[in-house]
Amino acid sequence: MIENTQNKIEEGKSIAIIAYLTLIGLIIAFVMNNDKKNSFSTYHIRQSLGLMCTGFALFMVNFIPYLGWILSLSATFVLVALWLMGLLNALNGKEQPIPVVGNLYNKWFANI
Image 1 (cartoon, helix red, strand yellow):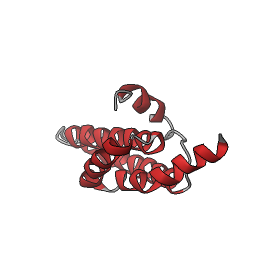
Image 2 (cartoon, rainbow, N blue to C red):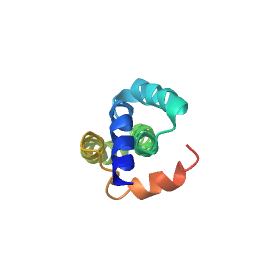
Image 3 (cartoon, rainbow, N blue to C red):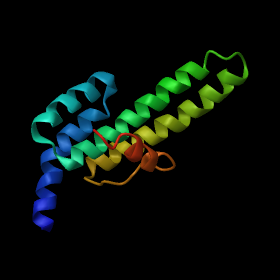
Image 4 (cartoon, rainbow, N blue to C red):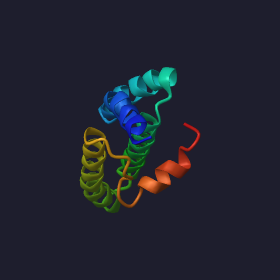
């Protein structure tokens, strides 16, 4: 059983890493994963999609003068740190949720 799980992680690792590399990488990972339906890569596609949606929301907040600019700038630094944690989890073969919002992303994007 452990060997089977380790094989799934190794098979899905490249797709999981690609998912964190820009919006185009996320789309490519989503298409590549539709053929195989690897649970490890699906998990990281959900995490990356959540980060992309959060980034888009921050982009929208940026249009609010002054307070939005401050909030967007500070939250962008946090978002980059969360992105780096997700990418490192994919590189290390871990299915660990991104702190604070990772469990929400899994719940919101459970249909993927």
